[in-house]
Image (tube, rainbow, N blue to C red; front, top):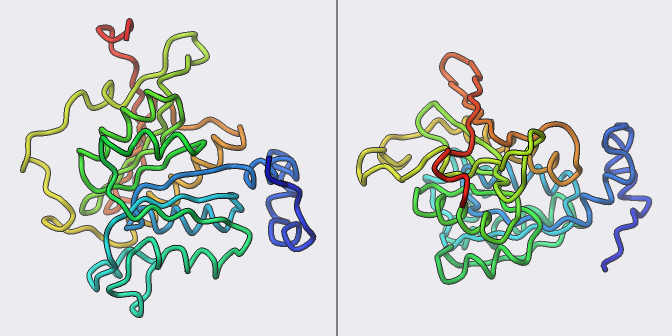
Length: 257
């Protein structure tokens, strides 16, 4: 097991965490011990990676096969103008290293697919999905459920965003199985029904709101504090500045799954 003790510089760096009774020094060591995989170093992945690195997550894995383009910079704030043309995993790795040298980054310059998903996920304690397409979201949700690790999944479009936490391999406080992604969204929408951000646009700061909330949920799950968004979908309407939450449950026809 790797050394998770905190040296004097880390104690100073995380002082505002350590003074929180809910977290403390033991909680900070738990964060240092954690291995988190982030799917996508784009609009959602950028704030997720920034805040988890700042929080002291010990190991961050990044899955992304894309390169930085000029149109990314309006929202993907982990990359700089000088990074245009570079692989996003390389740009993000450099930014994380500059922010917190105590964090180990594992770059996976590949596209998540059915052939590599299980092997990638198996090396981590928690996965955060910041992808921008339904195929990847369903694959991530199904894989995380199959191997039994938490998934924090989020989505954005135009001026709206949402996120939830998935742990369908566990039971809730009522003894009932937690719901899965397919209990919330049984099937992907038909192709072309929901436009992508490239087609419909997205306000850049929205990805910061949702990505930061994803990072917060991941910290809660890892540290065992608060009430994660399990069985709850948090939705944000940026134009009206309103948050709303809906509860969802395991569908009756899936109880025996």
